[in-house]
Image (cartoon, rainbow, N blue to C red):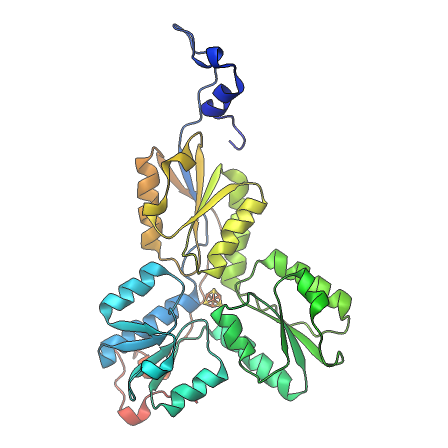
Amino acid sequence: MKNAPTLAASRAALPPEEAVPPKGGLSAEPAPRLEEILLAEPRGFCAGVDRAIEIVERALTKFGAPVYVRHEIVHNTYVVNDLKVKGAIFIEELSGVPPGATLVFSAHGVSRAVQEEARARGFQIFDATCPLVTKVHVEVAKLNKEGYEFIMIGHKGHPEVEGTMGQIDSGIHLVEDVADVARIAPLQTERLAVVTQTTLSVDDAAEISAAIVARFPQVRKPKQQDICYATQNRQDAVKVLSLQVDILIVVGSPTSSNSNRLRELAAKLGTEAYMVDDASELQEAWFEGKSRVGLTAGASAPEILVRQVIDRIKALGAVSVRKMDGVEETIKFPLPKGLKLDAQGQQIEISDSQLHQLS
Ligand code: SF4
């Protein structure tokens, strides 16, 4: 399927007079027609995103609107707009949030300074930080007490990176690529540890990590790598899928790190790849001369958007949808205490004094 010549391409290669097929016979190969959609498995929501959205929804049900959320709860336009309609207010600065309000920290996590400010302002706080991000925070705080400095592999300005770097006052050096590794200047090299953003390209992180080890052979690497299971699984699926299709569509918002990495990965493997926030962004021209379409979704993109993209590609001519074999994800993270359900699935009522406060 891949590299099959399109009719447009065949015509372009011919002199103009031969590009028009002679009457009574078509000698050129017919252009491939859109036939099949191949769905990546796994795709879409991970356990951390599921949990974060549920925390906001339950807080709205239990305490009523508005519920304030610091930063987009997850990086997806549809999810954020849906929660806005239900009564969530997304903010970046805590100064505009009234005292006593219910506040949720996003799945990306926050720095200690933000935690302390939120506590000082007297909010009722629910922490939707993904437990896999919290794990990195705990590791940084623990090793910091043992005198470690850190090299963090991540994207500058991403809220998760700001949250992780903000777990300690100083001593974390951010590297975004291999070239950065040569530039950093730790105060000492005896106690140096690597941490990573959870949603990086697995291959890029491995390359940067190797450069760090080459420069600082004694560096301490995480026992288990920080890149999370969901990021790894979605990238593994795209590696297999993109070699079987003519074009890959990733459903995800521009701010979503793991969605961007999926599109980049397919492109690196030589597959034409596009990322769309929703079906309205699909362009008919992308599918001209293509037969098989791969479809996946970042960890923050809901399945409803995938369904809408499938419908749109079907409207353009695809006749069948097939799901790839892939890893089945069964991980589920527990909710914060104040929002848990009882054994019958009913919301557990708790008194104000029992409300979960971040400590
Ligand atoms: S992508 Fe990974 S780290 Fe981020 S919320 Fe999902 S499971 Fe957690």
